[in-house]
Amino acid sequence: MLSTVAINIFNLLKEKTLPKVVITTHHKPDADAMGSSMGLHHFLKQIGIDSKVISPTDFANNLKWMPNSENVINFEESTDLCKAITDEADFIFCLDFNDLKRINEYGEVVSATKSIKILIDHHQHPIGFEDYSYWDDKASSTCELVYRFIHDIGLSDLINKSIASCLYTGILMDTGSFKYSNCSGQTHRIVAELIDAGANHIEIGDAVFDSFSEDRVRFIGYAISQKMEVFKDLNTALIVINDQELLKYNVTTGDTEGLVNYGLSIEGVKFAVLIIDRTKLVKMSFRSKGNFAANNFAKENFNGGGHFHAAGGSSDLSLEDTVKKFKTILYNYKEDLNV
Ligand code: 5GP
Ligand code: MN
Image (cartoon, rainbow, N blue to C red):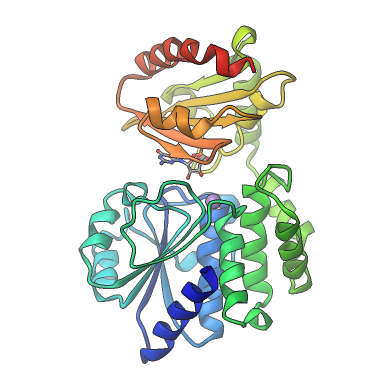
């Protein structure tokens, strides 16, 4: 029972005087990663526990309105500070990932500490590095799980505007604005509670969807009109972006979020793919509809994983060779893509 896990974790936190708590999440944290981390951070504050949020990398500008997010420590920028804080931690909450590879080099630091590691996550196939696991792959988002964790320990009354706003944002984004199959009646009931507790859906919608730079909007237009290939016989849409294009449009962290979904909005398309040359690595995003498993495709071919309908992976080949490899492999899935 997950509620027993929540109660056990809460008791451990209470037993310790002034516990040192770190909250971390996956690299390039998205809305669910940041929302769950900041939501938990504000909840711990409500129960008198100070916590430090460490991100393996920077995060998108459209999430910087989250209260206290200016105090998030970036491991890439402040490596020594993060190491010192992590080494001293009694508890490390690991949110929205279940494989230490997802937090880059910070994974070695986390794994080397004696701290109690608590996982809160909704991705399939956890590798099991944690001591306590509050995990449910049926949950819409990690933000939903943080809400359920607070509910399980009987403290939902402590949910204030900051907590509610952060958690609402992650649920909003991870359900594709309440459209995806991971969104249930329970998700809506939780969202209703969060709105009652102070989450302002108009302000949040404006902050996350309507606060981009002009460059970003032009970049999306360019990517769709000039760079999208549609393979009708395979019900697949592909966008490939090279490093020059990222520079030309001043693409910053978070700017490519959502781009992959446009392919899926074409009638008949069941599989949408975005391949981006991130210099160190070629990064891939996969989205699917119906019974095509994006996470299996990512796992089988590109060292990745994720959810059934939303997954990611990477390749250390050149951009050109990655695209060639992708196109060759895609034909092996012809039958699955035509169901
Ligand atoms: P995105 O395409 O937005 O980067 O990621 C979509 C989903 O796939 C997210 O749930 C994310 O956690 C997961 N994901 C993205 N990249 C990887 C990866 O390299 N490995 C694994 N295991 N999951 C990934
Ligand atoms: Mn998530």
